[in-house]
Length: 196
Image (cartoon, rainbow, N blue to C red; front, top):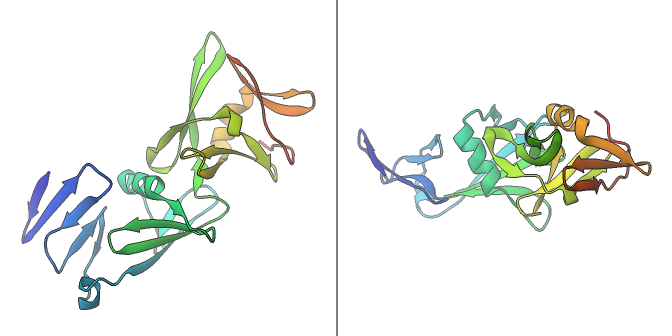
């Protein structure tokens, strides 16, 4: 799709590349506007910082990101560097994120219940990014419930609302917590008790 806005021609690609500008003096990247310096045009890289607070709200250069499209982009493009830092590459920008404990915070659940039993769970993150729960990856740490997302590449922490939604389907199995699913119990690896 191509849009013309004044002197700028914007191209949108359905792939991961997103918006890009055909004007050498103006760049539009996923809702962020920047005017590149001559050095940037020559190939240097912007270093940008962001943060993720404990409830999962994501900040970029000090401002909270509210646009769902941008939030989903950051969560889908997030990588982990060998030294453990969180990085999103976007054109000529290195967007570094410093989370409270993890970038992925499950804000709410979309449970699938059949005949009164939990059949499956869809995890909902910032920007309405969604992933299915892998019950085998559930674990607790310091009183919080975690699971693995993005094909096991990242840990996600369950937020308060998500824990409240999941609580009716949690039970103790031989003194250890377990998730009750229609197809059986899934033990939760535990280092400390889960708090709701």
